[in-house]
Length: 434
Image (cartoon, rainbow, N blue to C red):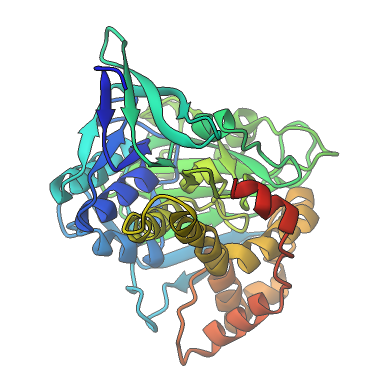
């Protein structure tokens, strides 16, 4: 080991919601954890800035003060389609809160990283991981990095590494974990506007009847207007293009959409508060396995964005906690087969929580969303039926709670349980345990 090497128990690469959650729960478990972040805080990220009640629950578990200034509560969702609209309040049953939240990612990630540091994690800013360090067997034992403005090279070593470096997934790629091109990859674009009319709207508004600017086809996704409560709104589009229909010009499509807005909403160029920015959304577990040779994938790095809705923050935070619990228990075992067996439980738990739900979502995304958008689901009959609307809302947001005496939860969970579990590939599993 060189004199420039820094030793710790766990390295987390990336201080987004997934990485900070993992570092926080590891630190709470008494693990010496190093959180490496290539940038500084605060920082901007392309996001809808909206959290469902499930995401709020995770923030509470992380000890975040959601009553502090800057958080805006939402009552539910408003769906707009074909000149009709329907309001869906967040459910009051179950263990999740009955409200959602919005907050700009400009300081959201900073808040979570500070929580991790307060729990005992060591945060290294301006530290970009440049590649994995591996032993002779190809197992990851740390990462190389460059730090500071002068990009000084350093090595960080640990028996376990958690990759939370976002959609780029550089660490996973360097370890040979390629993206599955058969799984969905969406694109989102968002822009902030100053709008006193809409900034205090208690609902997250989703539009399902938008048309692509180039083809006139239904947008294979939806548009959103999310209130931030500070005089601004987050306006954006998410699209999951079908292979046979080509790409979507999100900028032109958004311009076309905003031209439909009432003037008093103030969603015009002169009220723009940011440039239009876009980002990829890796969905439906499009990178597997989530654990291999000492490396765990969490959040966007593991393709954990929901294929149903494009939501990714709550999955990232939950996966970070699962990874932390798995690693903390595994580290109590000596290095070798016993520890490896414990680390593989991460894959089992992630798939228990989301496997069937994502498998069904991937199918729906391919057969419906990527071809026809969300309009077929929000037809006149569905929009006119409170039972169907609330069932669909619970399915799209994974808002079920178990155990629950809520009939809609029971129906949705039953539907998901009908999806066959993926077959275990023995050859692949053996390879992963090498």
